[in-house]
Length: 267
Image 1 (cartoon, rainbow, N blue to C red):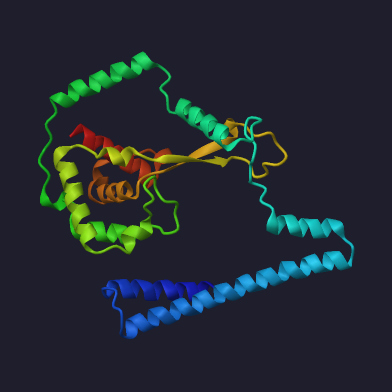
Image 2 (image 1 turned 60 degrees about the vertical axis):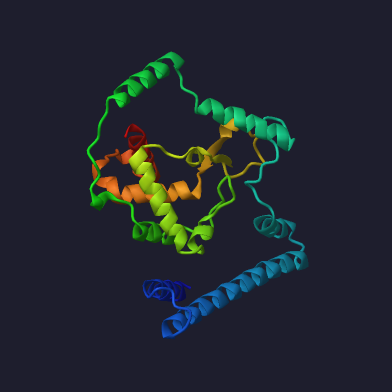
């Protein structure tokens, strides 16, 4: 599996470097490597299905109910599934509970202090004047195209339904338009309001949700941000990461990009 996967990745990277040709030896080698890897994946899935089918059959023949139901639960039941939160099973009510819970998590502890900090920031921003950006910090089409190709596939769509696959398989002119948009953001110092629109997916903190009465405190939220804003953040990291510093506890690219977006507001 590892050998075929590495060969498939290598041939795919070579195909991208060659300009994604639709014919020729590079294209054929990519297709053959992908075909071998996919065939082995299907064969592995078939064998896994055969293995647990035999285990269920053996459990029935030996009248071993414990082994039978252990195999059954491991394949057909999800321990992380939670249908009850705060003693409620109605989906609409649960959604409202999560909305109120996460809204409280993102509310400042001291409203007056937060307002004073905001007023201080706006006062300093009004008299702020930054240095002009040189060409080496410009976001060009090449950077945007490479950033899009490096996006991870198979992720959840954003609030508008866009995924990384939409950008990866889109027309090359999309990279040109996005590069112009990102340059306008840097010049104007204003981030589009759509970049702030996201949604939160609650994920249980514990593995087995069936043996415990779940509450909103037992969940952590994963924020699904707009795909285009992710591309913008990664472009900012590539160009301005030397000017930003984060502690060891902040070491992710997304938090570094959040700091970069704050600087864009300051400009």
